[in-house]
Image (tube, rainbow, N blue to C red; front, side, top):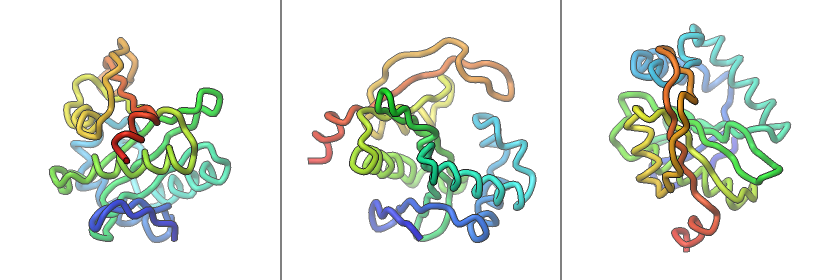
Length: 184
């Protein structure tokens, strides 16, 4: 199993569909009310089989270098996911998506996971820039971007379709040269 260790508590791992689908689905179930507000895919995730099918599909995308989706492990337990949703090879950037089970919020897990995936993006994938897009009113996601050292680039009007309609979206970015200063 591929694991990218971030610190003594947090790691990122390539998903193992037959093993990880059950615990990830259970986290989604327990956190469904909070997650579905910000993540349009949550209502369609109705079974362990749905999660297994999703994980199998993202591994295919990984094999085609279209995206990188990882399971966030906290103390070796799956607690959510973080991904490069797509790579823009022309302009050498990638955008991050993430979710975390409600019971794990407040432990500093997500900003560490963001730092870890940025490390992979800049070191292994050679991206120039990493972006986070978050609904303006998603305080937690915007807080993660800020805490992880991302620069606020601005807002796009009615750019994100969520369950209750279109929301304005904040765009945050981290450039390789900014990351290199922090990393050194």
